[in-house]
Structures are given as structure tokens and as C-alpha cells.
Length: 136
Image (cartoon, rainbow, N blue to C red; front, top):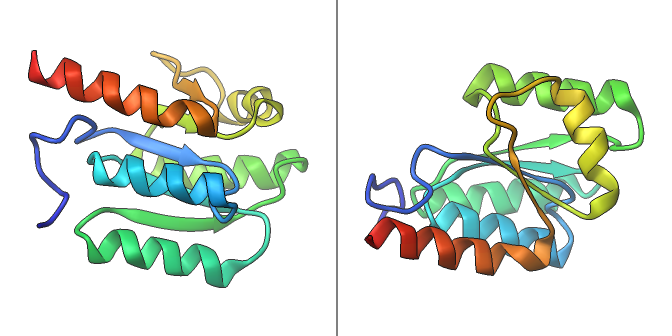
């Protein structure tokens, strides 16, 4: 069953998952994609793992792209955000550990509304709430 479906709770939303090649990032990215979100997969290294993840998501009917950047280098993070903004617009959801939130928001600049910031562990609860809200 393709996941590009307007009835999915995150259809039309864009997520940026930092370090999508770690186990928690990979799980978060796949869950967000299955819920209908377009997913930008950030990876600091392990391009092959990021490309395999993007391919798995696309093979299930989702939208994903991978981008390499060092989150501690503002210019690289800015480039990642520029590509994301050019292709899919402002992200609705940012997923990563707490150390990346401020740097990502700075690289994105002012957004309205601001994206939801989630830790990897918070993604399942966020998705449960999104699904419940979609049913009401």
C-alpha cells in the first residue's frame, strides 16, 4: 500500500531528521514517512546507510531525500536547510537530540509557525496524538 495518502495524519507535512543513520533516527524517519510526512534525512557520515533508508521510504510510496552535513558547522547546516526549503519548504517537524535544536532553528531563520521540535524518543507519542487528532 503506498503511503502517499491524504488521509494519513502527516500528509503534506515535512520533517527533518538529524542523524537519520543512527538507530533512533532511522526508526523516527521511517515512522514519520509511514504517517505521510516528506522526510529530509540528515547524515554526518555513512552515505550508503542514508541512501538505503531513503530508498526504503520511497519504495513504500513515501518521499525522502538524504543530505550530508556536519551539524556543528553552521555553513553546512545552512546548506541543508537551503536545500530543504527549496524542495519542500519550511519543515513542520525537526527530530534530533537537544543539542541540535538551537542550531537548526538558527540555520532555518524565522519561520511562521515554528517547527515542532522532537527528540527521537518523543516521535511515537507525537504520531499517536497526530493519528488520534486525524480521527476526530
